[in-house]
Image (cartoon, rainbow, N blue to C red; front, top):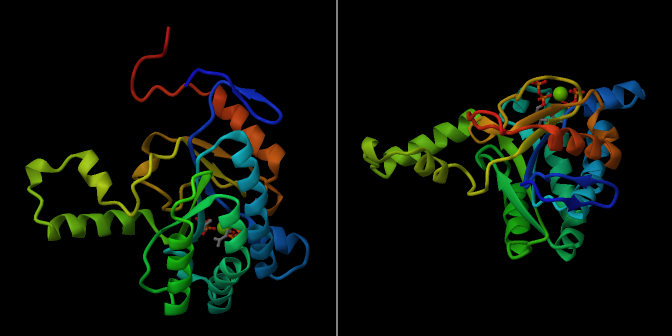
Length: 242
Ligand code: IPE
Ligand code: IPE
Ligand code: MG
């Protein structure tokens, strides 16, 4: 914190280590162009690469991207199938390049409900990239914050943890992944809600929302969010800095 960080375009007081992105607005982006919703999801996937690369340049170390929520199963079956297919195809097409570029891939969410073949592809992507350290791309897929908290609680009970021993730190260790909490949550598409994303981990994250639809969220948009972040004073319940 406090030290000057140079990016390709701007100097920031501080750069978030971990950003969570709620990639919203794919459907409206497509609708605006008279295209099917799935075309919007494809454009959304293409945009991940652009933001990932800029994030590496800027020095962000972890990106958690919300790709499919536990509530998204309630969408029309064709759209759900399309989203599942899109993840499989993306892994198939992009894994080698992501790996060569030093991207570590993680998955946050429930495996139950995802078809066996896609589960295998996800496990493989995580396995193949496990030693990479340029940036971590954590894909929240079949993810829900409440499901994550329930799953953690179940395992805590199964492990017979004494209620007196349960601390926030210990609880965090039972969440899906052992990552530092996100410093900032970005939501594209204009809504001001978390939609069940990282509800435990984002307790003190800086929230940023933009009306821009995810496929249009480019490097300049990311920099706008970073400028806004560097202006925020993170107090964590304390009094302001003198
Ligand atoms: C976000 O875009 C992507 C997923 C939820 C998979 P949407 O599909 O929610 O797009 P809008 O909100 O309908 O525009
Ligand atoms: C949040 O977007 C989930 C993802 C981006 C994967 P939604 O479009 O599903 O959220 P709501 O329905 O507007 O809350
Ligand atoms: Mg949406």
